[in-house]
Length: 265
Image 1 (tube, helix red, strand yellow):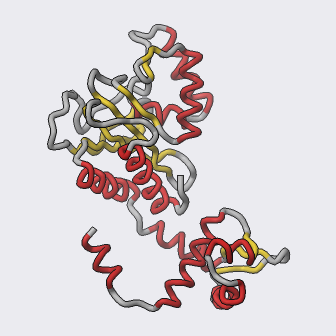
Image 2 (cartoon, rainbow, N blue to C red; image 1 turned 180 degrees about the vertical axis):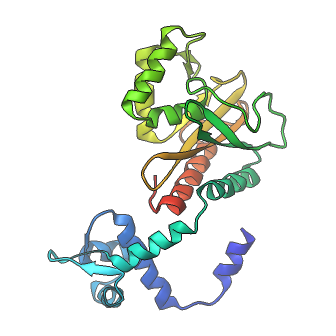
């Protein structure tokens, strides 16, 4: 945080910063964009904006298409690929997990998919006691853990069905969601909701008096790279969608995805 403040206080070249902001808006749009649309997003007059686009086009960062729309060009692609080569995805996720831990003082975990189950590869304890028996290196259930449901929801349909059908053929206990037991049919619907929202919340479903919120971090190919989870006592860790903890985990996972894969989840 301190480093970011120091960088922001230094004097830079404002026109360069503006040009890069324009480039970022084009990249975030997801499809070619008109001058008018870009002008509205940049909150800049079309005539002023056009000058930046001319320079970006000359340098090969932007292309103007036949339909008068603008998109990223080869130089932007090469720059992005070069940046990706220098990134360590797992280390990036760890950095965002560390920030969450420092800012919120909650138990934070990072998990990866280990072929059949999620594996905890980072565990950061809160300063407050949390009665859980999971630690670094623990394997979690894809059905009774929030991180596991994230991975399960994003598996290929055939693999997901194989695991779900096998589990429900002789379940030791039914999965729970928001305090209620979930049937197989409801569980399939729940997985679809998790996939759509990129979010899984547990309200005392994992252990009594423990709430959990998990969100996925994606790789460049769209697969789930890892899952960031926040755990806390139910009395002081609400997990409604408007909760500060839910929003913080979503922000961390989206920011990590953007840094790793170049888009926002």
